[in-house]
Length: 204
Image 1 (cartoon, rainbow, N blue to C red):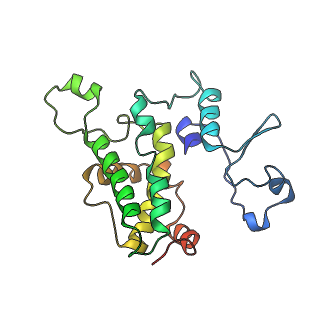
Image 2 (cartoon, helix red, strand yellow; image 1 turned 120 degrees about the horizontal axis):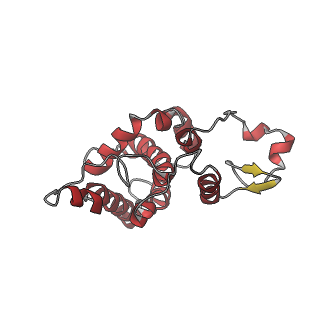
Image 3 (cartoon, one colour; image 1 turned 45 degrees about the vertical axis):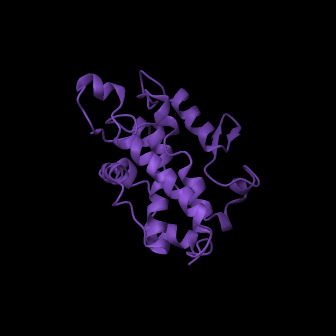
């Protein structure tokens, strides 16, 4: 998604990690994809990979994807963690895990519906944000980090918890805006792949 937004040329190759080529399985033993190999150095941390791409694929040849607001970088940062704990318990399980998950969603929803400073500078009377994404009307690194996780949460919760985002106006609008962008839509795994991955994790 980042490479696409940067306008960089790349080739996408799907690999079955259970039958991964020798060179790949030895690239970063014990680590899961994605990996980044550059000048013989391997990076396995997703955040480090994002930072490296932003620094290396920089202006004037490539656009910047960094956020204007630090708050956009951390918006929704606890959702996947609370979701991972919540989805592993049965529906009649620990209420506090569900509450933590819902609280993290509500926090992101509030951020998405609250006008940012640049919006208020344009319209001081604006009561609700109209921006398309976390930091404005363009996709940023923060969106590249959060949107794939939100997509997983959306698909898995619909299947195993009969829960969706429709009641959360800000998140619903955010996801709709994201799905309208081919950079996001075409880089998401298929729903069936996500559900297969969670078939042994999610509890009913």
